[in-house]
Image (tube, rainbow, N blue to C red; front, side, top):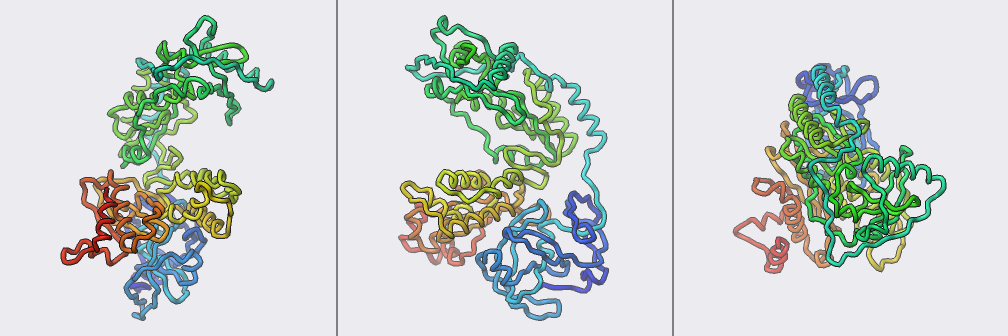
Length: 593
């Protein structure tokens, strides 16, 4: 049922919402304060509010109505947000028991303030004021109040954090000793012979800065001058000199010219974003430690030093520490850091960025203390100005993490949103690469981008048409109203929702939180292959389920889970009294292989 109930009507002044709990974020609306909160809180409400939000990237104002059990929009607004696919929905009755004519039910991307998610909505035949009902209030954790309470770290935790940082202050100071007791080895393929390149000419305006940096690296023992005539085993490549945002200079060897093609890169398993999120799942606050010139803290063995020579206008040098640009450097350094941090709860790293958390401040501080202790023991230094301590929100691997879940980093989203219409394949591939990195936040991204992907195919003539521009604009709008994804919790119920279209297949992994509200963990999708375009609707829907189960295998293996599909005929697959045709059965069977 949708509409007002007198006991809950906001206009009557009788409405009360929940219990008094801590509120964590506020957004000003009209003359009061509209708030997100952890659970529920009590507060008498005297009137309704028109709540501004983004729906599928379109600005909308909805009437927050605690007497409405479902959220509704009219068919005109439905068309304005892109007319997403409608599904059957049961009849609705209003608060006067009148029947409300509906067109169906669909799912939309909703973003309010920095909170985004994927929500169901009823589409009505009549274009009344859009209603934000209690179903959305529960999912968005929305309440209304006049008070604002900021989340704070306790004074005791602050003092303990300060004491811990002071105790291990050596970790935040320059350290030229190098990481102990580890040494990096560069393994070359058989037949590798030393190559020596002449130095490249450099701008006169940079020469003083290059000389100053070479002097610094030499004085710190990270670089040493060599006589190339007396070093028959030495390699030497020209340098690439990079001016960083802060004006400092980084000297990198262009090892592609010399040793990189001959290096046997160890097949080390880098942690994925999923691995990192799994490690910190359940954490409330986060600490991020940024290692200072990470590679250059790891000593090289004697033989490997010869592989890392550079040629400059001041002569030849060789690195004594692992330099930037060596193809095996990321895997080598990751392996060392994994070994050093092994066994610390709520702690992991991606190369030179360490992230630490805990279920509460005490556990967080305990884990942070252990990390700093190990960094100190192994002579590893960090860049204090780039470290973040016990923050409720941090940036990590191009994402923003907080207790609610994971969000795309706003700067990166802004960059995508501001991209101009591509004029060639290179620019289009750059755009697709950027949005694909955030594909977990966008439902059915790849099928929706099919027209753009087709333009990048080999032999395809570049012709940008209106349909390409429409997709381009739609994706930019969608990524602006992205979901907030919760971190996967193995203790929570798992739900997989799948869908198929003529362009592709997609799925979303959902979990019910402590309030029994379904929240997305990850979206996946792909376009259909040429042969799959000939599949029947039932076969495509079945293929979507197979695809989803394979993609989410690491989450669902050994666990019970529910699959939700809007394709009724699929039930026949699980009906022992009926079955598929032999052709359809063989196709679906092949899908599992």
